[in-house]
Image 1 (cartoon, rainbow, N blue to C red):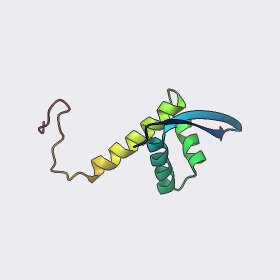
Image 2: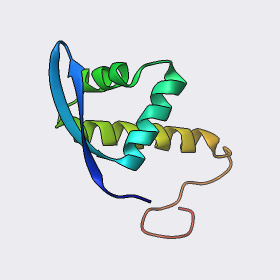
Image 3: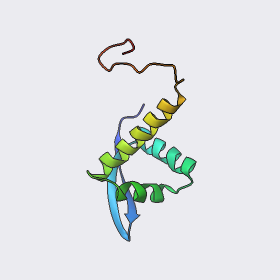
Length: 90
């Protein structure tokens, strides 16, 4: 997996802004945008509108949250959650 961070630029509300993302986060963000019927620019604008930190961090956290939600919804209901400090169910 390529861990190189790449700088990307996009126009938000008429002005150019840039952010840095690893290719894996960029590719997943593109998949999310496609799945939700948005362009990548629209997706970044939506995430930007609700962010609290810097844009790069907000994009990474959005991708992480999306993956966590999909993983959680894919687990069978009877599967107990794992305790983060143990390899056994809590």
